[in-house]
Amino acid sequence: MRVGVVPASIPFDPIADRYDESRGGERRGTFMAGVLAPHLDPGGVTAELGIGTGIVALAMTARGFGVA
Image 1 (tube, helix red, strand yellow):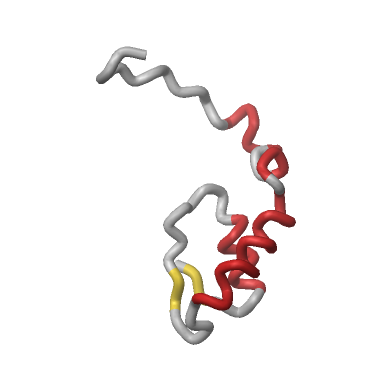
Image 2 (cartoon, rainbow, N blue to C red; image 1 turned 90 degrees about the horizontal axis):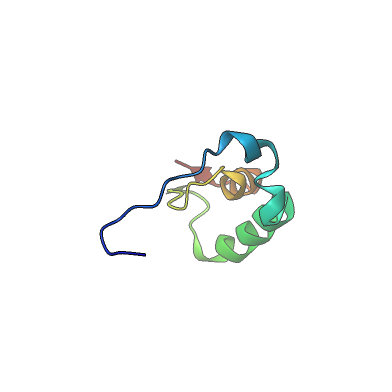
């Protein structure tokens, strides 16, 4: 690849319904929430910086964390 050349992007829509499952699904989200939880203040609000589909944020809110 040449420097400064951006490859064409691939539309997300065709795989949106199975994207999370292709990367571990809710099991991964729950696992990551368990890894992160001991390091966070349950009374505070946590920013989800990885964004993605929000599967980790969903698992964090299920544990009682505020996620923005």
